[in-house]
Length: 296
Image (cartoon, rainbow, N blue to C red; front, top):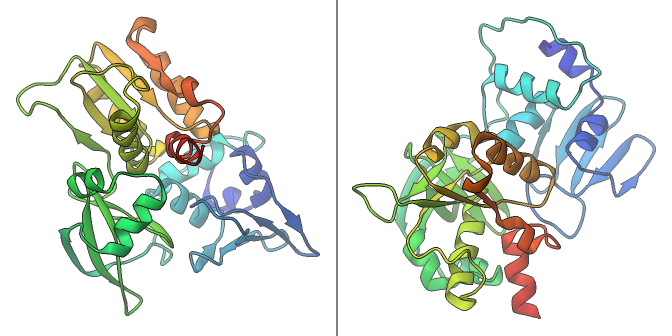
């Protein structure tokens, strides 16, 4: 698949393959809940004639390639085309060569500063999602940055390459480079077991649940943690998982999370992998489970 072929794909067909369905339709467009965050009012619009999208909450849009770059947090055009092709099987595969591809849709953060997490509004955001604030302060940082000449701040979670996943009530993104996060119980050698999470909010949810509901986890006494920070990063995690005797998967119960779990299960022996998401299979993800438990 090449860029021209990719742009011929209807965005609504691509989104449907990823598990997203429109909530309403008007003459020229479809409205969705944003694929980039949880929201109560649909803010993601697809123009079905022009094959372009615009996320009103994020304040950006573009074509199918721009969408893939936001979904998978990558600017590698070869990787983007492979991901699009995977969810558009009707488009014939062919060899292609792209020397370079640039886009202005990627966010550029300026004046980035990292501090201990102390801002009450950010702690309140995490506690509103059920996260124990002491755990959040221990595991996360606070990042201040400038974007489009405006100053913002967000919760920050570092990855192994020195980049940060960032979250606040209105934004979900990454200060590059994008990569996985690894937290080891022992700096000198890996534990026998490892827990895998899709995002750091799920990891914080796990630690909160472990503190509040002692019988919820897989009785991990001492374990390492790998946070994918996006299922698109799973290939970076697979080589690291080879060193563990037990792998506990706490991934999401959506299409991409199930596919990632299946990939891990298929890459290792049956006795080696526990699909813990079955314990919360009536919920979207581990954070959703935590929040519903708290309300219940």
